[in-house]
Image (cartoon, rainbow, N blue to C red; front, side, top):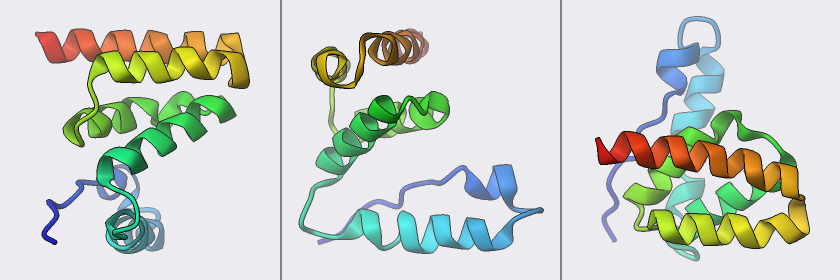
Length: 110
């Protein structure tokens, strides 16, 4: 099964100060874990977004929302998933995530 390479932003962001972090990001996280065949890239994106929203760690959410769209999720599906998560992860976390989705979808439409 051939997969397109997932472009990590780690090298650009941390390459000079944390080369080991970059290597783990590119080789282990996106090079190995994301390539395991038991879940599709689409499913991995949905799981990752759910964990980020549930944990209230939205700093990485814009990157992963864009990746999720590249991996086949629609904006409508992402909004529906986040709406569902509101009842399990908390309303404020879901609202914060929806603000980010709104910004991402507006930038994609331009």
